[in-house]
Image (cartoon, rainbow, N blue to C red; front, side, top):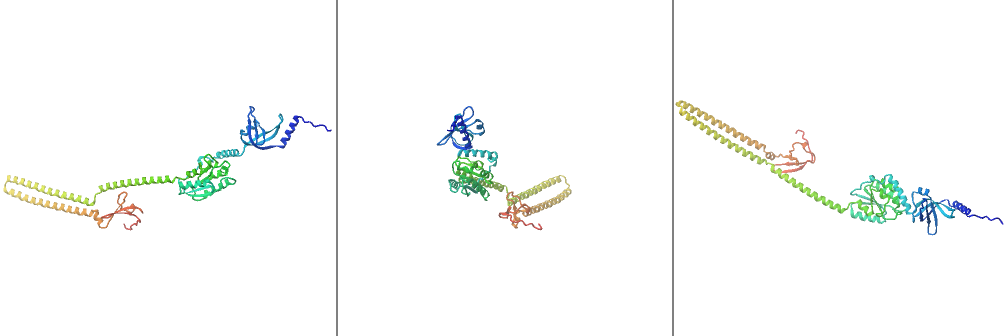
Length: 447
């Protein structure tokens, strides 16, 4: 009989380890972490399990420092590891080289990495946010045409601001190709004439459902949009990269519609208030102008009144002249009596006769002089009356002439250079005043 090949325990453990490591090079294993242990050595030990089996895992200190992440009990992870056998106890185990989260955890990890990258490039900076139009005329809606978001948007927009024109750019909002379609719709809306703002919206969902809104190309398309974009994605607790890069983030699609439009009830109240203030202002200005006009009318003297005043002054001067004539005559008579008395004291008669003759002659001259002066004064008075009649503006107006004034400054308009086309002028006739507008200015060849 051939000799027996007898294995020692060490040899068996050694060859088993070699066979296992040869059969299983570096592989990926998915499972749940449990039994986590962190001894003072700095190594980490735990069990990776699923519903049917479990395997011991070792994460050595040097590799642990390189990972940048720590394993936690209860986490579903994807482990990159080398399969081996611990010879000391002949126990099957794996040596951990790397750990990644599975499912939602992996998506969150990728989300955070992309967020940090885009934030470093400045895509989320407030300096790049565009202001929203206060009264948009046309609103682009980018969402699913069959989801709950479009109903919420339409109801809210029609209730708050029915004046805005709504343009639907339908797109898938989850699943393969959704991010690419959303990019196309944003570019299309930005190139559509008349659109003022874009509402990017969808209903709530899991992180997997919202994954299209974490697409890097979509984020860059939103950043490059020439139109302001409001993102109303998911529920209030949902945050996507599209929310962060948008010009404004709304908690829900309904909130996005409210942020994009003014409330028509508030606008009506504002218009009513402005109208009331305008009416009050106009009434106050009309009252002020009426008072100003009354003041001007009180200060304005009618030409007829001016003539009456001149006639009164002329009558007064005429009475004064007559009084002066009477007084002058009385002084002459008194002087004559005085001289007669003196002559009576210094007779001879001849001298008296001579003096009397001289007095008679002097008296005649004085009377002629007085009559001449009175005639001259009467002629002057008649000339003044005639001149006043000629200068009377009403007489000029009665001959068919008119007076033009600037209604704003009340200045007379005497030259065509004082007015322009469409100027307001006031034409005063003999018995009325006309408010007119200048339609044409015709220069005279021989002014």
